[in-house]
Amino acid sequence: MKYKFIAFWLIVFGVLFAFLQTSFQYHFYYIEQSQLFLFSESYIGNKLLLPGGFSMLVAEFLVQFFIKPYIGALVTAALLTGVGICTAGIVKRAASASGLFVLYVLPMLALLFVHFDFNYRVQGTVCYLMMTVLLCGYMRIRDDLYRLVSGWLLVPSLFWLAGSIAVLFAGMVCLFEGLRKTPKWYISLIGVTEVLLLGVGTVYFSLMGEYRWVFGPDLYYHYTLHPKEIVYYSWICLPLVYLVAFFFPNKSGWFGKKLLARISCIAQLIMISAVLWWGISKYSDAKTLRLKKLDYFARTEQWDKTMEECKGKLTNFLYMCHLNMALANKGELSDKMFNFDQRGPQGLLVQWNKSENISCMLSDIYFAMGATASSQEMAFEGYVSAMGDGNPRMLKRLVQTNLIYGTYLVAEKYISILEKTYAYRDWARSQRRFLYNDEAVESDPVLGTRRLMLPDRNSLAMINGLAGDLELFLEKGPANSAALQYLGAMYLLVKDLEGFKALVEKYYGTEFLPALPVHFQEAVIVMSEKEPDYWKCFNISETIVARFADYKKQVLANRNNTALAGLLNRSYGNTYWFYFMFK
Image (cartoon, rainbow, N blue to C red):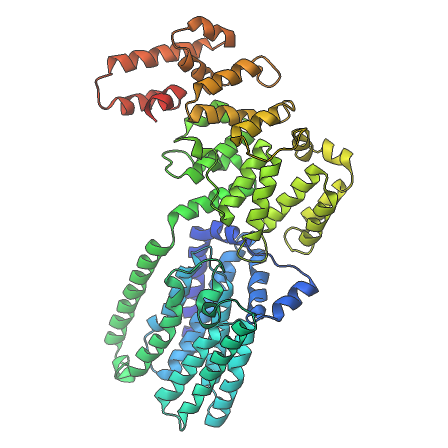
């Protein structure tokens, strides 16, 4: 029996790990950057002074390793399997002969589904495991008096170490004692009283700001948001599982027969599969999974993989922003942007919504185009709006932008913070060579290029819109071609041919724009279709001229065809002419 028990949980762990690694590997990379763990006495000491601080430290310590492949899936699978093992111990205290293994798995599944939400803290699962371990230990104490006394001690200890999960522990203790009809079982209500008093006192003395954080699972969710209903399922599930196990009839005889045992096993597997199918389809959120993958490619500068991921139909502007940023970083935005599905200027720069993920993406885009001030602003917003104590990725960006501006004291402060981390300390130490060293900054291909683009006159960022800022950067010289690419792309996507005309007439033939990229040539033809002599001013390729002639011929021949867009898309969907006419 012992070997079957071990084998069962090894299989559960293996299946969980394989599923999480194959389907959610980028999710773990994504959440790692939202929680900052520092190897610092003051950081650790301040956390330990707060209710739930110990569990938060444990969770953040684990999450910092999610930046490495396989670690996120490994840790999450281990935590969930631990919860399942402890739940099995709890169920067996209610019904030692129960063969309902589905009961062990249900709390695990409830926690698994909430892990799909990037606003959920791993701390919630760490706390749940701590609670079930203590509950198993509590239920194994045979002496009633010792058990009740230990409950009184465990409730406040768990509250301080793990936070609001102590409410569930105190409730389970009362349920356990009440169903067992322990003499004077009502004494267990002291634990409930303790947790109520501790919760009220915590809010009263401002250790926590809201009662939902001390009496419910909201503590384990992004502090500025209200969680979805799935967060509460695991808390509801455990007492229900215990009640089912306790009241399930004829437990030993029911499963003693081999045929009935096999039927029961198959039925439970079908039930688990159905719950999995429902939960994954409802809570996995495939759209964010793709965005997390693109975010990882941007973070690691894997621009070719970004472009490969964005082939085909795109309906999400966030995907398009990542795509166009990848093209700009490769210097191919003006030549290849219409090889992909473009749907307007929001595909270059979405509107800021004050969230962490949008702030981080905008910081990356602004940095790519050389808008250092805006990149720094968004990096700071992304840093302070992180779920944990900061976003280390945006902290790196703040180091870079302050080095570009020459504000070395501020850059040194951020470097010192990153030096206390596991994953970023080596990078932080490498940046110290730039401190108080203008020559080193100006010779660096990333920092030096952007320092050259800093405007000579102070002005509010974006006061004249994105176009105004990009024009300002271009006054400094052709240090960063991405600024010109973005400006030209913006004119094309909004179909502002007058603005585009002014741009190419000003910069064509200069070191900024020695030759027109493919889509710029196509746009010149659009804005001067009846002036072929004008095309010669920009040395439009004969191949492009001939292709436009074919395009125009197809349009005229099929102008009454309602399926004209689909017909032309096959041959000309990668041209600005098609975008201008049909999108």
